[in-house]
Image 1 (cartoon, rainbow, N blue to C red):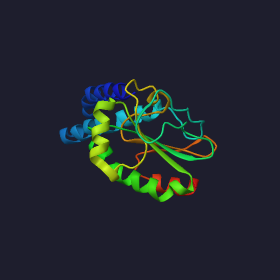
Image 2 (image 1 turned 30 degrees about the vertical axis):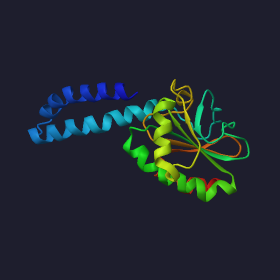
Image 3 (image 1 turned 90 degrees about the vertical axis):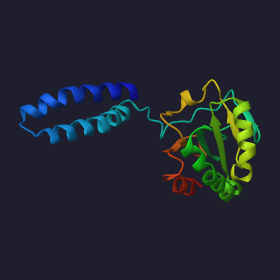
Image 4 (image 1 turned 45 degrees about the vertical axis):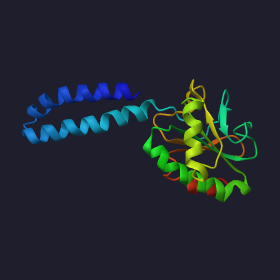
Length: 187
C-alpha cells in the first residue's frame, strides 16, 4: 500500500506541472502543489488500503519465542492485552518502552497484559532487553518470520493493538498516542 501511494504521488508530481500551468499558477505554486502531493497522496492511498482491525476479533499469537515473561496464551480471554510490534533499531520504539512498562506496572493487577513482539532474532533482542533492565518489564517475544504481524495491520513501528476482555480489538495506533486512555477505558 505504501509503495502504491508513492507511485501515485510520483504520477501526481509528473502531472502537477501541466495542471498548474494550465490553471495559470506561478511556478512557486506548482512546487507547493507537487510537495503536497508527495506528502498527502501516499497517506491517502495507505488509508484506503489499510486493513481495518478495530472492532474485529483479535488473532491468537503463535510461533513466538519469549525472551522475557511467560509463554502464556495471548490475547487471553478475560484480560485486556496490549500487543505491540517493535524493533531494537527503531528510536520511537525504544522511546515508548519505558512508557509501556509504566502502563503495565500501573494496570497489571487490574487485568492488563502487555507483550512486545519483535521480528528480530532472539540473539538480537535478549541482550537489548537485558540492557534495558527495569525500563523493559513486560513480556517480550520474538517472531522472526513475522507470522503474527500478518494478522495485525502493522504498517510501521511501533504499532500497538489493544485487545479487550472479549477478544475484540478496541484500539490501534502508536503506543504513546492515546493508548493510556484506551487502556483505562477498557479496564
